[in-house]
Image (cartoon, rainbow, N blue to C red; front, side, top):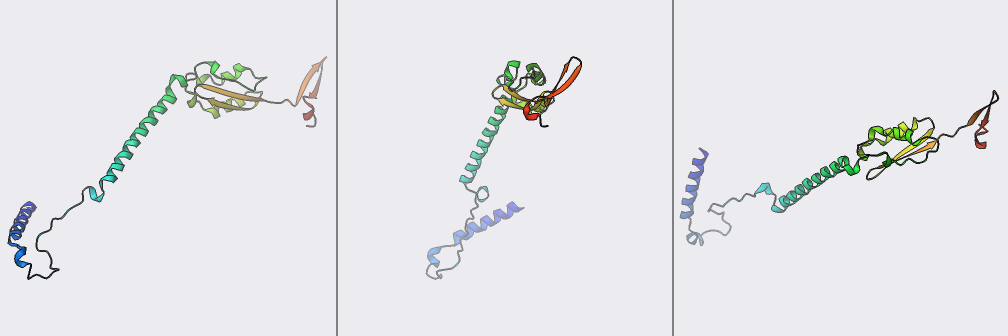
Length: 180
């Protein structure tokens, strides 16, 4: 129904445009008379925003997709690449231990074999190293691409117990601890 009305309006407007002749009315009309000719209404495309806005939006969208794709493949490489895996015990560099054996330290990292060094929980392994009897404090560092460096600080004995000829005697381990 609206189409029929629109067609009737267009026919009426075309008829009125033919009836309007400006040369006959130019002398009689005041200067600021309203136009009698129908005016074409222009509507802005894309809800009032111009092409630069949509071009910027397209460029930002494209760069966001490229960035997300690069981040995904980078994470896949870092987490699952064979060059990032902890494969051999030689990749663990144990430092700072004189009393604790290397095997005791390596035993804490057995479950991390064939895993990426980025997926190894360092705080958990540090806590496990501190559970070893002669370790006072420990730290674990990642050395990229595929190495770990656990460092253990040994406990200092306050005194030693010696048994000689059936007698036991305690003596201080160091002079600094004799006052304790």
